[in-house]
Image (tube, rainbow, N blue to C red; front, side, top):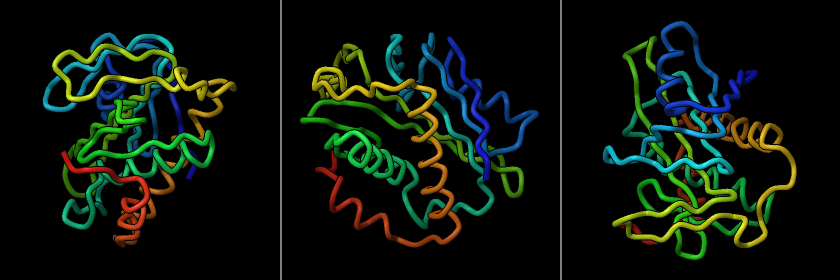
Length: 196
């Protein structure tokens, strides 16, 4: 299924824009912003969002998803880690429940929500990746890191690789939701790190 992507120069947060779009638009679709003014992290924390990084929200149909079948946030992290290794030779790991790490430092984060019920439900998946900037993390357990520090930042445009990443996530998550299998557990053996 084709993925419609809205590319924005700035947004309060891609998740808030995506949630608002759900009023008039059916999934799947995605929102990407070059900068967020009110980025959202886990536990109600703000997510610093300087220009040069990747901020996106992917929205998928939620009527077939059951939280008891597999952990959506973890599977999203594993799918991103796989994409980074396959495309950019980046050896990222996933720390439960929603951190992407590189060399023990925070490379990105994931935030997921279920909206609505039954046939009208949707899965909203927010992703932030530090590409060129590593923002301060006051009080955080991990220092931040950006791919640019390792000379691993992608050379092509964010419209190119960002679309590839989002389409990859769409494919992995849609298949997992449809089949409900636990193949993700093998990926955790490869990309998972200690539970925090």
